[in-house]
Structure formats: structure tokens, C-alpha cells
Length: 275
Image: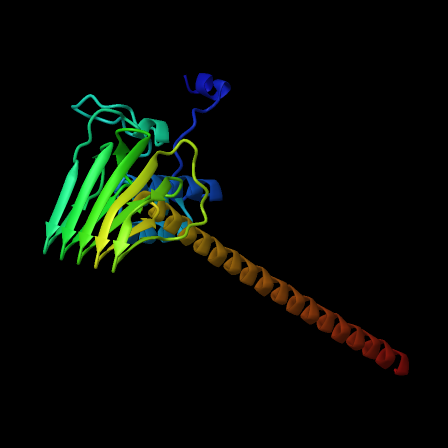
């Protein structure tokens, strides 16, 4: 039976804990960590600690515990409600139907609309000596064009949209203002159009463009990995320089040893000739 197995080839065995890990192994672990960060399984501090441990790991035994409590492949989504499948595209986020919220009011207080909510065709926000936040970065849209009517009286309302969304500001400011922050990202033709209208009386309405939280975390993770890659490159460069210096020193010692040996041989020959 043993001979039969040997002739057919030994089945591959999982790597032992003492086997040295390759750069590809460390990259696979870092991919799992980035996925876990994007899915909310790890916070940024845990991600940074594990990613640093990944690039310091030298063996499989050091790599294995880093992802022991994380899934190594995408898990199927489980949802008890029948909803449109979201693939991250703008087409999947324009859902039609009614909005999940059509108004927000803040009187000497505040209101928020943020997260995974559906923006109706017309939303009205009112702030009197208070503040409101209307965040569209994770939102779905009832139509390709939505209107957000803001009334701010001695208060303020912020409208936050993701990059790529076309924004048209048509509000009126009386001893107040409607402001839109400049942006460098061109509008996406597939993205919805947001029209901001209303009145700012001794108050203000401001439109910001910000990346969604997952994108910000992804960029931070990429910058963290680039920093670790630079540190690893500097370490390898330093080790290579140290090895070059050691080789040069070794060659110098060898040359000095050969020179001394030649001098010793010449002196022995001279002494034998004199005798």
C-alpha cells in the first residue's frame, strides 16, 4: 500500500508551522484583513496591528493566528427582506418608489438623515436656531433627480454628497448664505442629480463632498500598507548594504591575510638562501 502511494505521488500536506512564509502568503493574509475592515469585522486599530504583524511574520505559524477568527472567503449575505441587489453601482442605488423620510425639523435642536436611507423625490429640511445634517453618501435615491429644500433661520443645514453626484444650488440667502465647496472630481453621468433649494435667513446651508466611510477606510488601509512596504524596502536596503559592507570587509581581511602570507613566504625563502 505504501509503495502504491509512493508511485502515484505523495498527497500534498498543509504547510507546517515552521515552514517559511512567502511574500504571496503575506499578501493573501493582507487581502483578508482589508476585506474584514471593509465589512466592519475589524476597526482601524485592529487592522493596523494585524497588518503590521502580517508583514513581520516569517513562518506559517506566525501567520495563522492573524486570521483565525476571520472568514477566508466571502460569506453569503443573509437578509429576511426582499430588497434590490446592491452591487455598488449608481443604477442599483436608484430604486424608485417612495423615500424612507420626506422631512426633518430642528427647533433649537438638531436632526440627521444619514446611513442607508432612501432619498425621496423631494425632501424638506427646516432648522430654527438649530442644525440639520442630510448625508447622502450611503443613501439610495427614489429617482435620478431629487430636490432637497432647506430652510435655515438663525441655524444651519449641511448637505453631504459623495463624489460624482451632480449638485445644483438654487437657494436664497438673506443675511445668510448657500455655499457649495469646490471639488476636483468630475460628475458621473450615471449618478443622480441633486437640486438644493430653499432659504437661509441669518443662517446657512452648506454642501460638502466627502468620500463614504468604507472608501476612507480603504484609502487609509492602502496608505498604511504603502508605509509598511516602504519600511520593508528600507529594511531590505539596509540589510543589503550591511551585507555589502561585510563582504568588502571580508575581502579586505582576506587580501591582508594573503599579503602577510606572501611576506612570510618571501622571508622564509630569504632565510633559507642565507643559510
